[in-house]
Length: 614
Image (cartoon, rainbow, N blue to C red; front, top):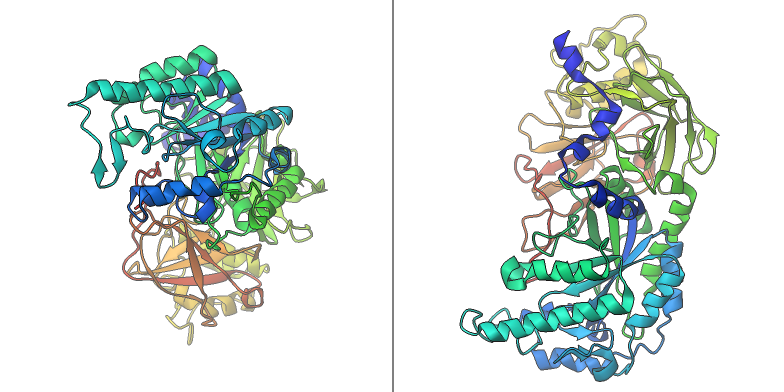
């Protein structure tokens, strides 16, 4: 009885778990409210690096080109087709609630007409000969969008900054402290300009890793920010003074520890415009990434890189429009939501409404049913968001909610199911007893889809019902005990997929794959159970291994895969996307075998800022 009491928790208590851990004050919570509810922001990297389409600042810092060559791009930055009103319009129509724009990157080139000593500006030094930041901020405010300003603490161009490139330093701070203080005065003077001109809601710092908080005088900088706006939000890269975490590029496997966080993420592989970077993620991938981030309680800050003439590349505009379509349809399941259900309760992406009376499920597969475990409260209703189509459901005595979806019209990207309760529902968490069915019971189920789902679910949790059952490794000559009620279709499915069921064990922990999985005895083959028909390629996160081969179990079809957001110099793995031809999907449950180069190695560390770009 004691263990049962310990395992039963209110969903509301679970949802407030992170709140109890956080050290934020009530005023902090009020300040962060708009940010927490926004869910989508648009990042803009725009600067002279778009002229030649090279890495912003890093290209000369890493000595790929020399400094003079890099700065010649000032003569090509025209902004001749720049339409700040269109920028604001397309950003707002994407569903974003805020924007962060690079006012000055590490190269020291300022987009506004800065009067700080030694400032290099677009209005004075570039072909455009005008302040390009002010009109955009004006349009943002007209559109009702929150204003975020990116500002690089380092300025590798400034004569009083100590670092110039990876291999060249101007001086040592301890030897020339007055010179360093001159730089501090310069950058804080620029902050004063930005704050007085634009009254930003958010300040997004970068580059703090190059010096200590004391050297940056971060406490003094925070005082400057607070003087202009006591409620200003600061990202985590003003060391020791930030309000929220900013993991970069890699979608976290598990939610960051901070109560507030934001994934900054590129549409292709680049921050600024690069004409030969065609490795774009599809709109479907980006929408599913947003759903993933929402389910972990964070925001997505999606980056675009305009061209030197001020136009937004068509591929990037397409993604913004696709986001707008999806968010407009599902706005109630996006804004103001909170972190979703634990993986043990739901093998997928989910979120909770702010009043805790609705659970949202984000389905990126068209399928006949879905299950939630450990639910002690009967829902009032279930429906498809944006369609108002009612969803029928059953709640079993084992506290398993089954949603019946066979007659549902699925969205081309992500379908959202809203399950509504009269009061915040009660869920069991922490090793509760799941459905307990014998192999014979499962085999006698007339619904093959439900039967094989239950087999996979048990296997995922480490309970292989087919061990010592008479199953053979190739599915031939099986001696599985049958009765007159045994479903032959289920037996045929088991025979076809025997490889994934024979002496296999517990699958991946939460966060790596939004579904059920299993591992071979040598832990070198990962089996993914794919429900229904995916709307796009299935995704794997946090797999450190190299991949030797991917195939469909039971028919041998070889599958290709593509890795996004893998930085070659970092041990942080990218996201593995696997396309499955629709004609090769199993009508009951498809199984994918991923052969790894060695026993599975998982990356579950926190994803932070990228402090190098070699």
